[in-house]
Length: 327
Image (cartoon, rainbow, N blue to C red; front, side, top):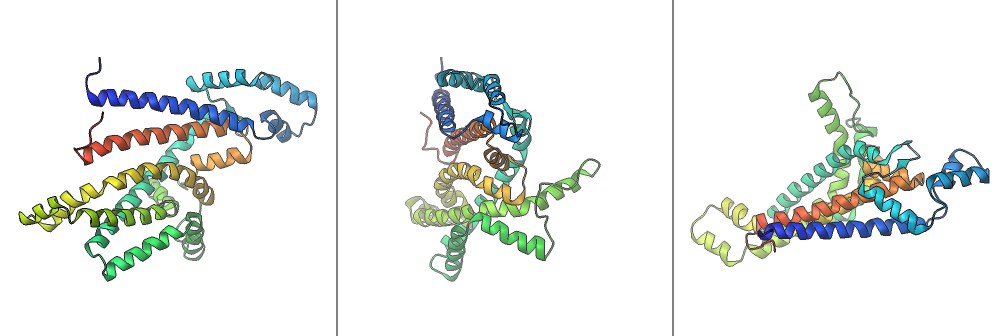
């Protein structure tokens, strides 16, 4: 018997996540069925085989001749057992391909989130403490500029400047060193490749977090508990970080959950521009080659990731604000 409110909450949220995931799987199955052609047509086209008998045998082997509800049932069964099928464009299991590309995408996403949160929070606090001054105007203008500039355009500009002109940073890929190279050299090599895609992917959210943190700080800095802290003679730095910034962070955490889902979409473009070997580039290649099992596998992984982050955000809320309880 689960008596703890947090245990009951987690169990309820997990049940909701499973239901949402099942709905997503069913919807993506039917949406992909609406696309013209099928996997057999794609395989036959790549093999340059126009024989109708060859296509018919392919459909028979892949189970595409069965009724739609039977195909859906088999697809749900494979999803439950983590058998996501075979990616015909790579001639490899879908799950293996996703797991191979997962570390690169997680590295890019985590680095982009950390940069956006740290830089956006710091600039927002700095602008709020100097509201309506020259520093506030400069930060607000810069944030608006970042907000209005597409990430892929920033990426192309960085390639032209730092790769073509200055030759400081590599243009594409994740690393150039392998095998016998020292670990510190490999880490430095990956970091050099990471800089431009990380900046391109995070600048938009640096602007969002800056504006959001500034507005939240201006809202809380005149509340009663802040005035009480000042009347007690606490150090200004302690008041800013302990009392003001902690409560102003709540809207930032909400935006963090939205950023993860947006990053998955944005990473498709950024990873393609920079040749970053992650899930986003894999999704682009799967759609370009009409690899239906791979597309469905990537969509399923993305849904699981977004649902997991949503649950983590709710747990973080309770740590930032003790008034919020899990019920």
